[in-house]
Image (cartoon, rainbow over all chains, first blue to last red):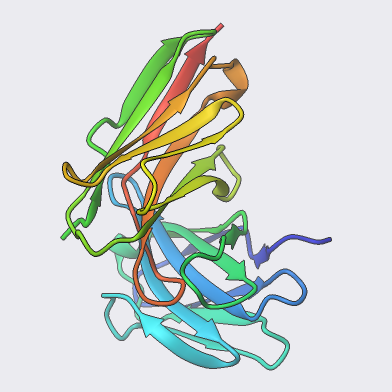
Amino acid sequence: KAGVTQTPRYLIKTRGQQVTLSCSPISGHRSVSWYQQTPGQGLQFLFEYFSETQRNKGNFPGRFSGRQFSNSRSEMNVSTLELGDSALYLCASSLVSRHTGELFFGEGSRLTVL
Amino acid sequence: DQQVKQNSPSLSVQEGRISILNCDYTNSMFDYFLWYKKYPAEGPTFLISISSIKDKNEDGRFTVFLNKSAKHLSLHIVPSQPGDSAVYFCAAPGTGNQFYFGTGTSLTVIP
């Protein structure tokens, strides 16, 4: 069964631009979470979507937003990019939104902001 | 405000020896902990978990120990193999599928 697919894998943007990242979860998984990984900070939770509804949001500015479609695919958007947004953005899917559930991560989208 | 902390950024161990990776947490309400392993250019993969009602959970070469009074958990890998070289993250749950991750420990197993 196919894993979590994230596109694009790599991208370079300049300050002030915006970016949209896409995530296709494992078939049948209804929960999609997004994390930002930066050196020295580990994985920081951005938000979680379950059945097209945002269930939870981490401590990130409003420039970070997301959505989930009826087929459970999810997108996240970052507007007015800053240098500090350079990071690996990881998407994770799960069957249900329950914290004892295992997360299945994609390979990530590496964003570089110049 | 890091609720889960891994204070050792890196660890090197000889093949066949024991690897011990440590993790501390601040929130005594955490009732479940997980370890994930991450290879370069791959997403993290689930390794092992432990419920707070237990103090030990074992899966093959991997054992996780939980000391609730010290708010400390550790992952033991015995024996360590070169393929275990990766970054290891410990994590604890927030709401839903929000998890608090540590900053990771990069393990190198030397052949």
